[in-house]
Amino acid sequence: MGLPGVNVVERDLLCRLDPGSIMRAAGLEPDPWQDRILRSRAHRAIAKVHRQGGKSTTYAAAALHRALYPKNPRGALVLIFAAAQRQSMEVHRKIVELLAALRPSVGVDKSSESRLVFDNGSRIVALPATETTILGYSAPELVIIDEAARVPDILYASVRPMLAVSDGDLWLCSTPFGQRGFFHHEWTKGGDAWLRVEQAAPQCRRITAEFLAEERSRYPEWWYRQEYDPVEFADTEGQAISYELVMRAMGGVEALQLVQPPAPTATLLGGVEALSL
Image (cartoon, rainbow, N blue to C red):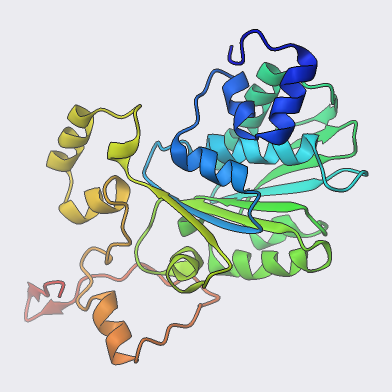
């Protein structure tokens, strides 16, 4: 385990002051992007990170830190939304693993596949990103949306009002998934309120150059650039007109849609597939 030679009191103090120490207690050394976002305590944070970049582990550590050391003496509500039930359960599993390694003084009263209730009053709830799952929750201290690029815009529009009374924090993380949706909008047009953090796969010490070379040889270049390096918002495959040209034609105006559009399909012109511009 991490943090060798540190007693229980010292470990608790380290984790309170530095959320990255929660990962270190589990033997996980944070990457620079993970350290930056965990230490930031940002009100609005958005991370654009390659596949297998440690996004879920990072936000599991952030959720656990808020639950163990809440701003409110009655405890914190931390909500984690993911694109699918399987993903939300995976984030919950990572939280449980970090908790087992940390062995904090705060105990767990109740535990299920999607929920942890702590004896300091805090709760962590991990849910799939559907509009019905958010009913009944209010005043969260922290809302996390994992793989946000694949979460419907309507969920995002439903989540934001929950933060009004608590003035809660909102953190988004994802690998890009085309030039559409609220994740792309907040990264490119969201303004200065957001802390933006990014990492491409070559910066990750756990991923070898040989693996990346193999991936690049197997998939289209646009896919590799979106998934691994430089982790860019690529035009959708088969898109006849690029996002950049559309924005120029509209004078740079972009509206955040509340309904996730379907992925565009290639247009056939006289039986010939149109080329992306």
